[in-house]
Amino acid sequence: MLTNKSGLPDALVRAVMSDTYSKGDSDYSVTELLKSPRQVALAKIHKDSLTEDVADRIWSLYGQVAHLILERANLKDISETRYFGSFLNKRISAQIDHMTLDGSILTDWKFVTAWKFKVGKPVEPEWESQLNMQLELLRMNGLDAKQIQIIGLLRDWSKLEAERVPDYPKKGVIVAPVEIWPRKRTVAFIEERITLHEATRGVRKEDLPLCSDSERWAKPACWAVMKGERAIRYGVCFSEEEALSKQGLNPGTRVEFRRGESVKCRAYCNVSEFCSQYKTIKESL
Ligand code: SF4
Image 1 (cartoon, rainbow, N blue to C red):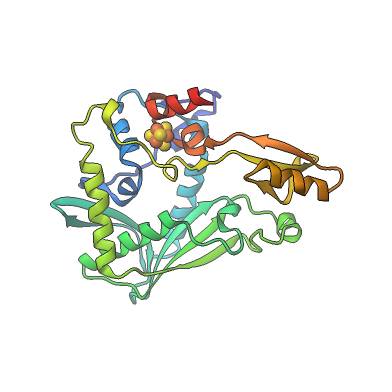
Image 2: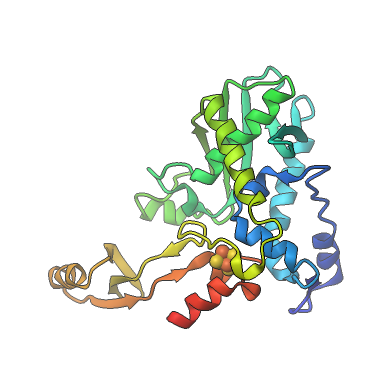
């Protein structure tokens, strides 16, 4: 159910509600397979009670706008098309953002914050998996690609930050090539994800598998050497001793303790209010 806690105008609410996303006639979409089995299972159990606020869907709305415009400009190629394939007797689907008709390049657009493309940072492992899974579905439908890539459209890119911070991306758009896995590895990966999700069928919510640190985007506790409101460069340390020694070398700084947290649970998981694992984490803080 969609809520509108900030009383945003109807035009905006209708725009958010007009999202036509569907995984088609499939058991799982690639996006769903990449989520944690616990999150997907809890979403199924609580599907009638899940709420989302219009204000929290604004970036998704921007992403749809960008996809629509890119699709409109690429009539000659394959864009925004869903492909299907079967693995372990399950029907899997993936929506392809863009594929050149000569079969050379498969692209996925990502409308994300600039820090996702910090200089020297490898492509997010989830994106690499997603593109390889998409490629496998294309192959099952008689298509193929010689290259796969992410194009990052950096929604909050700042020219001033690019000039000021060495590892900040230098342009508001980034083309990031992605490694193509051997087919065997991709098929094994898809089958493993299906098996993990299928294992939650009929399981009571108390007995669902727990989310791993990476699925929760867990950040360990740390000590930051601060100057004013910001940590100094390389000032985030995972031991207090290291932070204190850096503070000694940088006059005018102070050390601030930052508690560890599960970033996804706190701010980005649609089932957090129903999740006993997150409740336990919060109680332990
Ligand atoms: S709230 Fe956290 S632990 Fe619970 S399903 Fe979501 S990501 Fe996993």
